[in-house]
Length: 171
Image 1 (cartoon, one colour):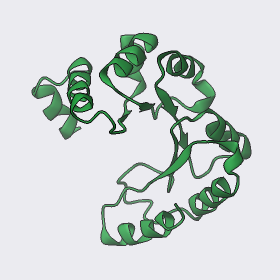
Image 2 (cartoon, rainbow, N blue to C red):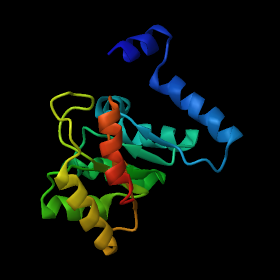
Image 3 (spheres, rainbow, N blue to C red):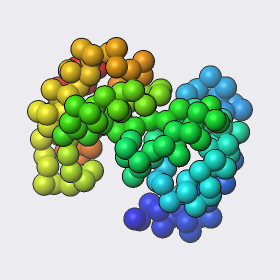
Image 4 (cartoon, rainbow, N blue to C red):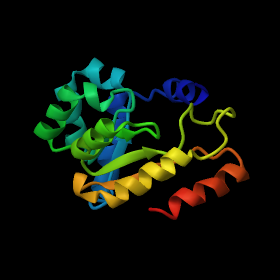
């Protein structure tokens, strides 16, 4: 919340953030640029309009974490129409159908969560064994997706950082 408040106080808005992306894209034309944005920004601007603006600014992919794959038809259509890759989250507790859907519908990469819970929370201190199993299964079944896999691990301590290395060895 503090970071969001600082950004708002500094006058940062989605259009201004995309202007920054456009300047970065101009300077580094081959740099892959992916943004994580929440659905309220995308839907508030109009899904098609947001994707078109993102593409115009030079965005390659969008990860919208609060739009699950099962509710993403409009997002997927806008991504396909604009040429912006949609990235979906694969939670550690995903069932077989969700795994298949995320693998099939993600473009660019699949974002694999390394553990369940709120990022940075102290209640979930171990990398999920389920995530390790899920990552290994996704690696074995690469035919499900042409996308790469990216792992996520919130590390607020050395212990968590060391535990996340176990997952990164699989990548």
